[in-house]
Length: 209
Image (cartoon, rainbow, N blue to C red; front, side, top):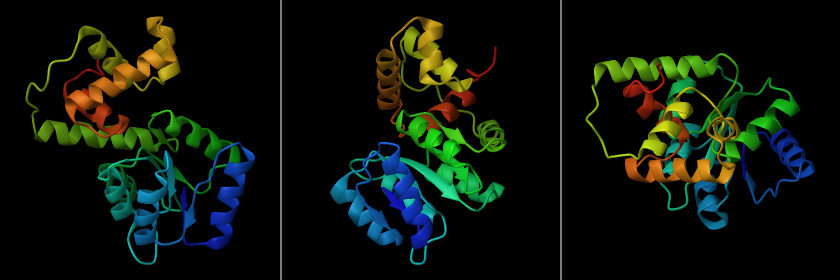
């Protein structure tokens, strides 16, 4: 599903996705309509602009994350400002790409987002992880639910920024098994997406060593 208030840009994105083999189930230029339509068509991935005429994209992302069938949300914005990036991630966005990205970079970001990987324009990933470290230093976490040794091992590699494919190769597991471990961990920790999972891991120092 594509949400952008500029018709030519929105149509171009939808066309690129369709040509790449994706099923574009809906397009819209308004935030409130996006939430209504998403509830009806239940997209797996939403490509979302932050600047919408009726409702900020951050609020749309927050509403999508809280829905009964939360999709992966890839923000595609003209802004690369730190505040916009962090607000989008905190609202539940899985990734953030600036509109200066190439068609190939965009399609790769959609693919990775659909697989559950956090995707960011180069330079923004460090910004997000740095902010998570700052927040975790201010609020020491509790012990949390009990994870299995394998779940902890996968979580440690997630925190280091490895993709599902890289984790599967490292641990000699199938891609599906890695996804299952991540989904089980998300369920146990009551987290919504892999970005929140990375934050959880960093809070516990699992990205170190």
